[in-house]
Image (cartoon, rainbow over all chains, first blue to last red; front, side, top):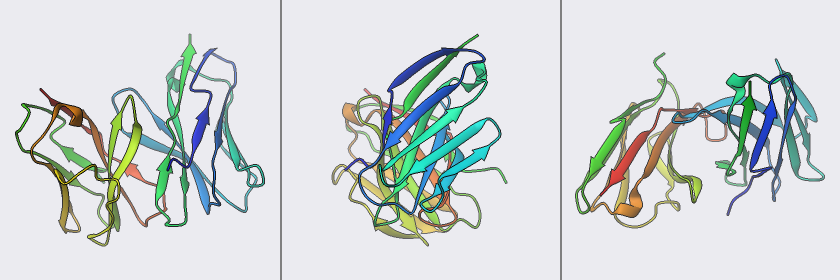
Length: 110
Length: 113
């Protein structure tokens, strides 16, 4: 069964704006990860947040985690055209393997 | 490190033919994963290995699919016989441990005619 579900499915913004993507999951987790996939390429790891963390930053990325609501958000600030990609959240379930959501397609218009 | 290496990058074959996809994980990584990605179903985990041993193959669609990892530096995913519905991009990923950050290869785009 699918663990992570991203929302929205697609997001289109102008360069310089902030982009926020959300992820909801169903069962308890040890950590949650966000990945990016450019068209025709493999997934690239962006950031990992552990279940005992509430917020984490990496450059222009900010990730929050609310375990009580079983949700996470990824914020990209001051977006650039190069940020255009699909973004996936991945959670580890009881068997410790990662399960990926279907992703959010972000389009940043120049 | 060269990262995860997959071959071939593209494969076009006819229905009924055998297809073998290859993966070389990052040296020192203990876990290896095979995924399939389609527009309809998204990214699906097919099977994963830990220390060369298959741990969970519940995602393998059917008996036509098989995967092996004869040593720590090589894995194959075989489809025999192939069908048009197997057309997808197949990714291999490796990680230091099972739930750690995964490093993806560039994928193999398979088209079965």
